[in-house]
Length: 127
Image 1: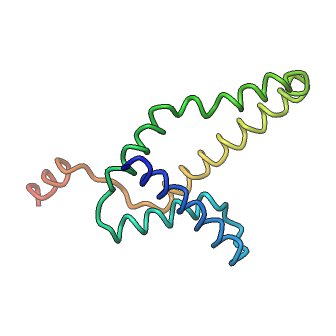
Image 2: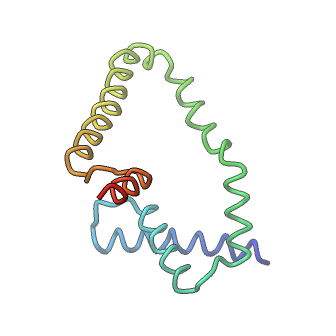
């Protein structure tokens, strides 16, 4: 009975996410809204119910199975992927590395300098 309750919680949160998306016409995916709704409900409830915990642990334990359809699709479209593999790899690399370096550069410019605790102690002793 607990597992049915956990599945019902997940399904109802997904349904609530779809309803919120349709009513607000938000540009946020319904599953993301569903996670926010579920998180808010769990925050109000104060803990994770046992049934929801059981279902969540099961889904996380078998997460690899959810990627099988993607792999099958990639294998089915391997001829098309072979043609665009070079440009696609370049796009993925650039769109990962460039924001990483830009974020690091901005952080270095905006963050206060880090002083290690032992350096602070030695400065205080000399003053």
